[in-house]
Image 1 (cartoon, rainbow, N blue to C red):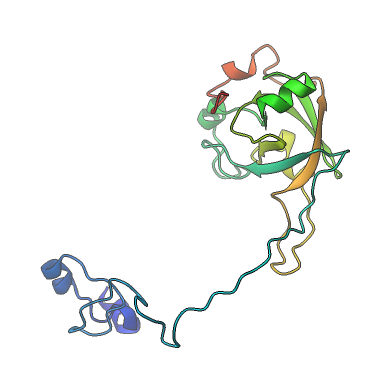
Image 2: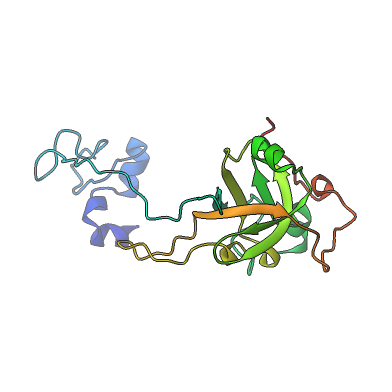
Length: 206
């Protein structure tokens, strides 16, 4: 800490003795006699008041249409991390062992689908096959899948087009459609209902 103080002006006035005596010091605290700074820029900025500019909302993401009527969003489940190359172990796999396609009950009813049904999820780039989880957690018109499972790889579907400003791929939003399917021939849980596998269940019943 002493070395860090010597090279960090914002911490220079904060010693261990002072922390023990005062119970804590807000930084920046540039000198031993400085009181600390509970609120940075509470009154003004060094160059004057903060400035704000309105911006118009817009998106360059792929939007749904008649052929791909749902918006796909991808993310995580609690028990896995990314592709699992460092964290995938049998104990965690047993808790959440497969990809699930989350769909709102109204959308599922309209398509004649139920939890546990096999579906093909298709975008302009490809198709994956997984089982449906009907849940109120997904808003109507939106499909959610986790991206942890190589056998139903989310990025088969997503758009790798780069954002014009940030230069990052648009992996989070794209248009998809859903259709009935059958279990892949190498699926290892064919005789087990989806909600009997690990902790898979509807997190937000409607």
